[in-house]
Structures are given as structure tokens and as C-alpha cells.
Image (tube, rainbow, N blue to C red; front, side, top):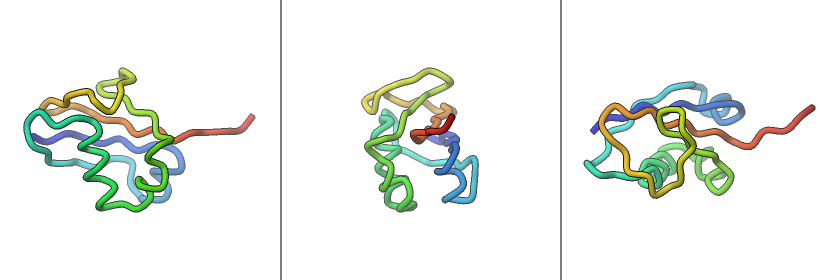
Length: 81
């Protein structure tokens, strides 16, 4: 299956893209997608434990099963005033 990855804030800046596509096996979970991304992008690995994740604009945990065409957002922590 193919899903779309949305990247935000410093993560998007570091990778140099705001959107990616990712091919995964059926019944893959959010955690599986993040595992795959950490292999390709060291920036994801550095933020892994601090990323918020959302599927189709709903916050989810790493065990959420993904479906064809889902949109997975990776949201790093932000600060500021």
C-alpha cells in the first residue's frame, strides 16, 4: 500500500520536503512507517521519541494500523512564544 507522509516544522526543514510517499506492506502500523523513515532519514531517528503522529488529521499512537491512501503527519515538538 502507498501512504502520504506530511512533515512539519523543523523536520520538514531538515529533510527539505513537506511531503513524501511511502510504500508499506498491508496492515502496517504507524510505528512501521516511522521505522522505514528512520532508515532513510536520520532526522526522523533523532526526533522519533518526541514526534506526535496523526492519521487523516486525527492524533494516533504508533500501533494504529494504516490503510491504502492514508495521510500520516509527523509533528515534531515546537516551542516559542
